[in-house]
Image (cartoon, rainbow, N blue to C red; front, side):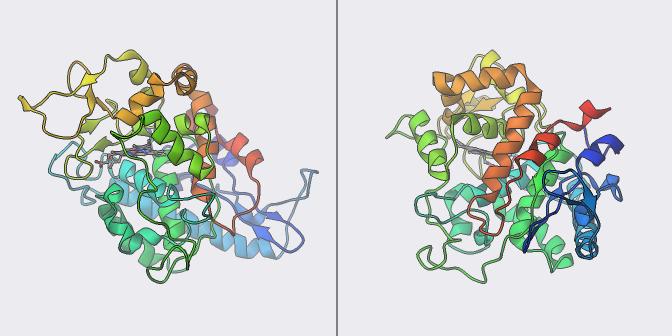
Length: 375
Ligand code: HEM
């Protein structure tokens, strides 16, 4: 697994950038590994608009302190991912059910995505602001099954960083996990708030009703339509849907969480374009048996060896030609996948976060390359 490698050049590119407008300072943090501690340049650099100049101001000191805290936070998250006692419990008892192999990472990615993926652009509610999944009923929504384990793992980390919101920690942990597992450098901007208790979405727009996250199979509507309904509601397009779905290179389905079984790839703790290759190249058929006995779980697909899986929602990406053209691109070009994933992930994780308004495309473009390409 590609993690924890010190890489000076990339760290330089992964600088966090603070842009000081007349009244507003927006801070960004790369999820760059803590092993690059001290190299994260941080908010101490202020870019003069359009001129590419950097000047130091008094605000730089506050930003430097915040940068330091985020570097420490990253180190704590990485240590937790490496800790054999960080459990990801499941009756499936899959490899990586304990930490140390990085298999906590996929669960952290799913947590971040499920926090953000509740956003509705029409109702203007949901999203990662508020960390609303800490409260019932959202914590008990079927789609969030198993994520209590991820939130519990982050609880002591949150206690050590009282000044950073749960909402920021949940998203930042997802960014750290992706990058630690070999993914692209992801820009991160803090500023999400924490709700103090459960509330009706009509009263507090950080909350959202159940049913906002996608189902893996549906009887009433074609899956490609369902997937579009869900992601278009967030304001995302076909290309962004396919790019984000590439996160299924990571992790696995658990029979005691979603009811499905198995990993999508043979390297579920490495972020790569393997998901797209396997989607295209493997022969997928409906799963009939499991460990020699009839499969009684929900309908899913498996490869001929029966050790990998796809959901109906995954298969929709190759069944639908408008999705498939992006699958083919990402299968052929991992660099393009990383760049598009970075943009889509950044957009996703900022949906509904009212205090994060600064456009950051420029930064995304420079940060999107995988670190090994900077050697
Ligand atoms: C149509 C869209 C999607 C559907 C139907 C879907 C469905 C699922 C299901 C059923 C699981 C298994 C949960 C379990 O049993 O533990 C899962 C896991 C996962 N999903 Fe998705 N997902 C979708 C999109 C996404 C997106 C957009 C991301 C991230 C950007 C993502 C990241 C993950 C990760 C990393 C896991 C593995 C979690 C673990 O190993 O604990 N998924 N997804």
